[in-house]
Image (cartoon, rainbow, N blue to C red; front, side, top):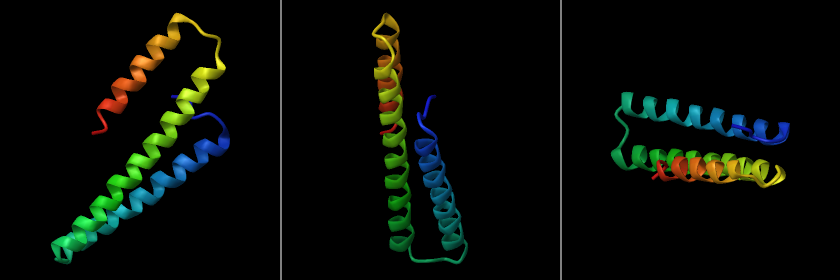
Length: 89
């Protein structure tokens, strides 16, 4: 993984920490018997946040590959990225 610039790396880490807090919040909601729609809404927000962090990382990865000279390795990198993205569904 090459997240690119220190700014991109910091942004991904910030997003992951926010997601971590959201997950802890959902755990507390379940422990305190909050209503299911409230819990599900928060879980949907977590799913969306993970998706956005994944897209940010994928964009940084693609940008990194584009800065390198075109080689057969680019095809391998593309296959790896597409395989990883396919598992996000």
